[in-house]
Amino acid sequence: MTACHGHYLTVATIFRGRMSMKEVDEQMLNVQNKNSSYFVEWIPNNVKMAVCNIPPRGLKVTVTFLGNSMAIQELFKRISEQFTAMFWSKAFLHWYTGEGMDEMEFTEATSNMNDLVFEYQQYQEGTSEEEEDFGEKAEEEA
Image 1 (cartoon, helix red, strand yellow):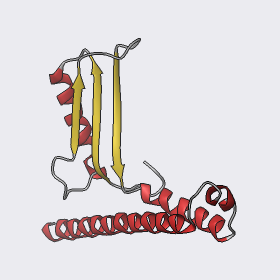
Image 2: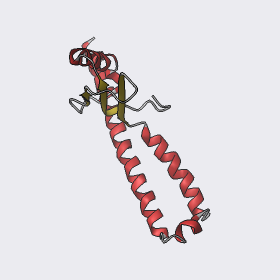
Image 3: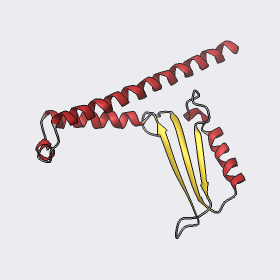
């Protein structure tokens, strides 16, 4: 996990090679159970997998993992801050405008990234509230 320990919204795994589908299912269920605290609860069936029985050339088995984690917002924030500082000072801008880009395209891209960060923050806050509610319910039951 990254420094902010964001929860996963969804993940996908892709297996290639000869393997037992039963073993793949068991191992994925095991991973889900062990790491359930890292997943948001409000997205059901948020782990998907695919199996291709044909191995890649030169290897027997491979696995690819793709995860959509709320932790990515920290990277987006850092990139946005660094970009804004460079854009404000017009550093390297002439290279792009010389190739036909307009300054407005950069402004729009920054706005889109900031909107994405805002959406991730809303999901993060919603997840935090759910965890607090769960903690309060557990205390009441005890």
